[in-house]
Length: 237
Image (cartoon, rainbow, N blue to C red):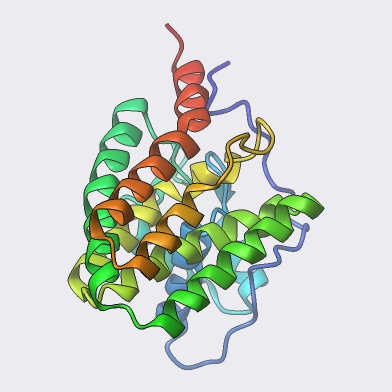
């Protein structure tokens, strides 16, 4: 049996805490936005099936706007269709993960370097508060929320740079890699201290663009090492 089919399906009756009923206006657009956010934040796992009717029920909308939202994400390669035509969350290949990681290091590092020059202190403080919330999640072993907050930290860092085009591109990368980040803590807590996030925050406060960029690189490379091992193991020799 392949690694893609080894993961269990989410039961169709099981509630999903990221799903909320939608109002009537712009239903397809709003369902698309909710699904996209769930992908970015690791709330949907690789190989998870998103069957049309159960998803429509969860969102409280008809099948037509739900189908539109799902197929829009399929066209963006954020979701995929299996052999039976069911929408699934794709599993990244090792080559895809490595490419996304390299682009993230470049773009998020660029954003951090720029943010070190332009971000006001109060916004840096808000970014630091996000990391403190992550630390609390580590202490309580609330890893689901930690993954969510980690996404918020990285995208928030990009927004500090006042580079909207770059931020939009980075968000697209997170839509693709977010599901694999649901496995970020499968091997337990990272064992380094200080956390690279702290290195980034201190660099921002010192207005040090080189150190901010290097902190992002350390976080992406070291923090994602376990994910590389996981994908390598899934692909086999």
